[in-house]
Amino acid sequence: MKNQVIHSQPSFVLANEQVSVAITKRGGQMAPVTFKSRDGQQISPYYISPWQDEEPANMPAEVLVPLRGDFFCMPFGGNASEYKGEKHPPHGETATGVWSFVDDKTSRPDCSRLTLALDTHIRKGRVTKEISLCEQHPVVYQRHTVEGFVGPTPVGHHATLAMPDDVGTFRISTSPFRLGMTNPGVFSDPACGEYQLLAIGKTFGDLKEIPTLLKEPACIDCSRLPLRRGFSDLFAVVADIEALNGTPAWSAAVNTKEHWVWFSLRDPRKLPTTAFWLENHGRHSFPWNGRNQCLGLEDICGFFADGLAASVNENTLSDQGIATAITCSDATPADIRSIQGAVSVPATFDRVAEICFGDNEITLRSESGQLVTVPLNYKFVLGEGLQP
Image 1: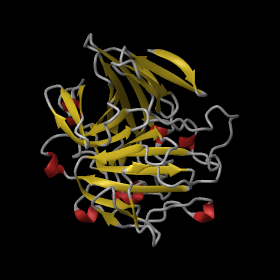
Image 2: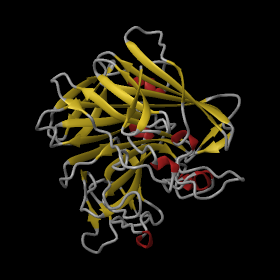
Image 3: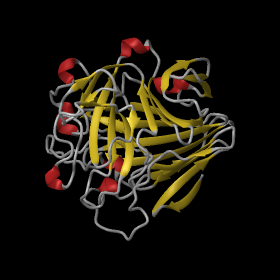
Image 4: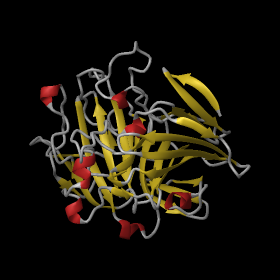
């Protein structure tokens, strides 16, 4: 483990022969991350906000100061409304506070691990972040343990990828979902210099047919990104737990120009929903200034990005039996896990149609019939074992 300043942010750096990962001290935000494929390709899929190397300025939200890559959010969302006297910053103190080094010890010689901790103050608690890398595994294992923080809260991982410029370059897919829905309220307000393309509060069953605000096209294919320039949108899908039959839920993005795939695995019993943030030069206020382009694939237990109050109260999803908050207690620490990785794929590998789970490996099958096998311990994300 090393300490470095990377794109203006003091960071912890953990690396082995396959993966190098940087975690900012402020916000615990993960990027840059470089995955080194067997063919020698170096893949750096995560987004870093364009203002990072500019002169420091007062940001409208603390989370924007280091904004990059993936980070753990609690309470997940904008948190614009108070809840029982609590007023949290957007995405919570876990995404904005300063994380402290605990240790870099592991009991396995083939794994490296970095352990950080953060004490929350608005609602008292302690969060321990464990980042693990294992030899021959082109993935980052993450585990967040929450002690205290008693009460209900939305939580989630805010994974954000750098989106290519060319329309349709990214091919997006997910494991089976029971419900797809566009953001239930206005996501991008023109009065604030923001513009959205997708409809408000409309359901869908296929990423290729998502309703818009327009008469033509009435629906748009969100499995091929980016969409047309000038919009910022949000939609979400809720995992079909029965169809998964005990395996992890997943999301995948194939870069068909650079020929790699990024994927995430999660336990759908704890993080049932993935919120997709489509940012394509659609925000013109500071610090966005119309220049931001990225894709969020955010694995959450929450009500879209609305935050604590909306997630713990009755809402459109909870009315359908979909969890939008976890409940933390003093008796049992909450345990939230994620696996994120990236590997090279053949030039004819288009969109992930299926992920098959084998013995310490997964196999990604494309719609074109290509197969790519990735060594990893997917059972970790389901809570089987304290380490990968």
